[in-house]
Length: 104
Image (tube, rainbow, N blue to C red; front, side):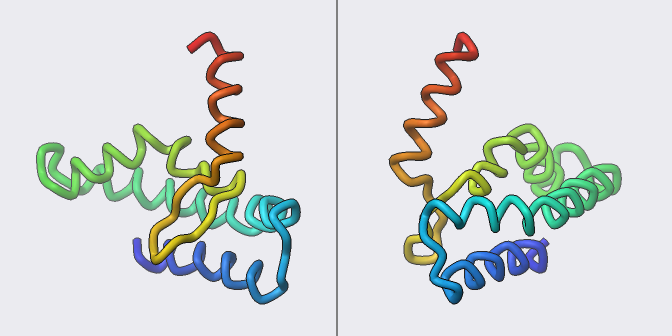
């Protein structure tokens, strides 16, 4: 699991090293992270079959899979602060607009 996270952070390092601006980072994330996220989801689905449903691991896997879309939000464009990943204000505004248009 941590190896997948490391691969995702490697994409962020590449964007920073290439000095990509906020307009170009999402394109890099989308192109490079999709295969990693697809593999991660397959890994979680496989591990879910092996984990006891009420175990901490089973709970964590269920949580991740139930919130998969939210966990993938960073592809749209997130800022990295002190080891944590948080949505930028622009991303939150975009998401609110999407939720409103979906009738939520």
